[in-house]
Amino acid sequence: MSTIVTRKVNCQDCFRCVRSCPVKAIGIDKGHARVIEERCILCGRCVLECPQQAKEIDWQMHEVIQAINTGRQVIMSLAPSYVAAFPEYSWESLVDCLTGAGIATVLETAEAADIVSQVYGNYCLS
Image 1 (cartoon, rainbow, N blue to C red):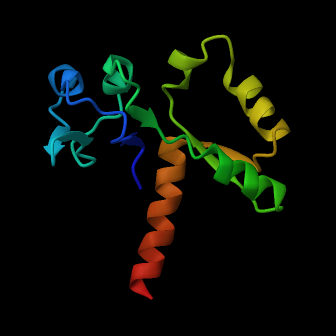
Image 2: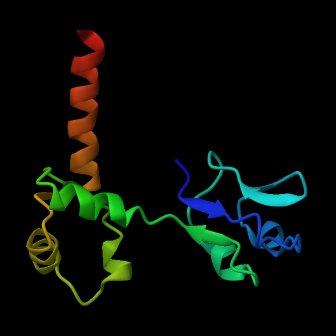
């Protein structure tokens, strides 16, 4: 699943995104720029650089909202870099906001990664 997608109908082949990508994660496919996911660091520079708004972020919020609304348990993995995006929130206040919005559990990414690794290991050994 792509996080940054290209709307080909908007892409005017200016290649500004190609020139602006710091990790060379934009390729050309049939004349249109596309994100090479395995190289992309999700900095969003291509989204900001595109004058045609052909690059967009697939936020996937509708899936999260639908899961909450249907009673599914939604668990969020929050990167420690959240402080750069939300400097006005402490960990506790951000967790309170998220749980108030219907998120069941909020874990720091390293903690969540450890749990996923354990479950994956148990699954593979079965």
